[in-house]
Image (cartoon, rainbow, N blue to C red; front, top):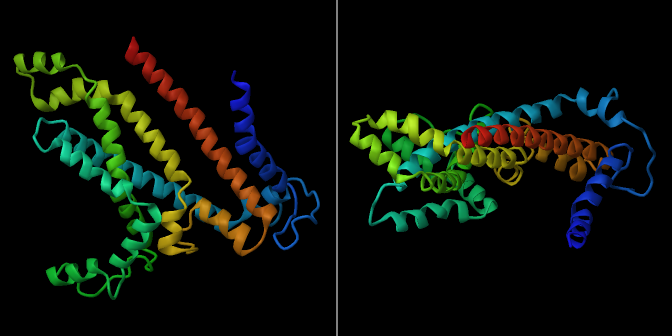
Length: 285
């Protein structure tokens, strides 16, 4: 019964992956992809290999920094929003629907929109900050090396926080009401209720949401590419792969970078699944 599904998965997933790994062991180029030679691990550990490339490690650092900042902020803000939406209110349904708007907008559209809003000469962000006296001169949000990555993180937080909030809200609504009623009768302070009851009970759902967002952030491409293109200061691993494959035409080298990105995400997924399994087992016990 599962054979047809496995065949489809092999066709759309396993075969392209194996081809990518194979090309990473060759010197294939986009100008003549059929004419290549097997070079082993030269693209990885050679004199000019991936592991010796400062640009690759810069992309790895950018990706990890982006992931750490964005997922942390989205988790904290999403938790706060979810706690507010979990309160009884006549507007709760309307607020939930409105919350989905940033997440529903395609990433390319929202990235382009924010690029114009953050423009140093014509952007509305600089206009209002200048009017309020917060800044003395327009800031190049997406061109300044010290601001560009931070700006991209804020845009990602704006877009992905609703996703985190809805996942956490689903976990909050699974918490038994009896727990809160017993705590209220005993006069337990709200902070202790959150720390002793709410947080432990929603922790499995919170971890799932964080893992999903972390895996998504590690392979970020469209947001960074639309806002800052191939800038070395913000280049992610996915943008680096695209640059090597398309701009430079280095199919073998780009495939090596793509393979490294895949195995990094796969390793993180395995570790995360192991941690979540332990958390679920503790919660069940």
